Length: 482
Image 1 (spheres, rainbow, N blue to C red):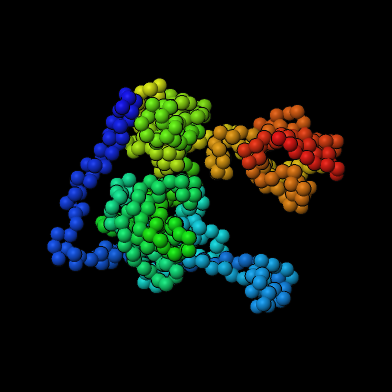
Image 2: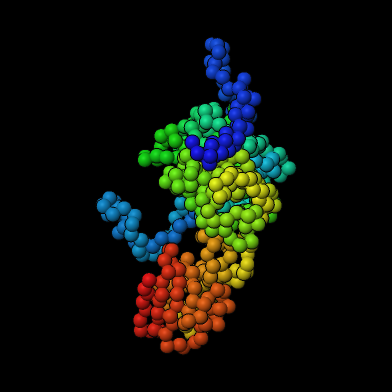
């Protein structure tokens, strides 16, 4: 084993040492049954305390469609289903169901974003069958979490305390409480099957607790609790080919829930701290070239000037191996660690730099909004009329869920009634880079370049990772090329 590999092994050992100490501290709590009396032990006391804080959530959404009576014919439906919608407008109500967890006695509830997405009405039913209308305090699609509020007057509701989900270990016994298939509150048991599950495609900050406790449709937003009755995570997804439980469920860790809840209670706007790096996962091949004996870590490709990472001396080619003593396996794991921190907090990174493992202290901050976004709808007699654009910046990019390093002017909306909308000269998500020989770095640059009644417009843009050059001759032609 070379010197770098030895240092990395030592680093990993140091990173897991606190977890080992934690396991030893509670080893008297984690033993197999020693007698017949112990086999007869029950989860009922835990459920009795936790279940009142888990609620059922029902939503309604009004959907407008166009159809004629012919399409309601059973024979037509048998062959074509509901894929056609013509005729007079028709409104129908679409409902969905899920679960939620009361985390504050004044009626603050955590659930999944996908449970309440697009809802016109949200109804919360408590464990004692009382019903309340709920309003959305914060809805974050990137973490698939939403914070709701119900008004129960001066009554204090039962709550679940959020645990430190970093202390969850594989093999821990857990209970899942929710409303599967809408049949009513249900409790299932299992163990933690895995920790730090990433690359599941469930949310942008994919970092999940995996459990084999039965989780089914309707459990989304419900509680995953430990043997001390604390909230370990919010059940959010299952791995299944049929839609029913196959013993592989995923829960958003409580530490991520804390960060979203903190934003909802403080200011109602979620802005996550940033590190300011772009990187890639260290694969087996990369690890060998770097002198590491295993895959793991994040190789830095780029560092944003003036970012927390830049101020801490990180540079391209460095490898982030651990955050706060917790081993980093891949980029989603790194993003999770940073996203759960508060603005201004300091974190210690273990970094492989120039052949040596070094500790770097980074003070996290919020991504800057420089330049200001200046969201503007273009007017005038030109092909760009009717598009809405804005200046990119690290903070705005984070909201748009795009690469923080991208610069330029982003197309945010395209009015379908305009030439740009009809002929798709531009699409939402395009980034304008230049027009008629002028660089477009801000909205004002675009406005200055768009004079009325030009004979043609040649512009450069970035679309889905590719750079294109396009030319429009008004009322005649349009083409793009790479």
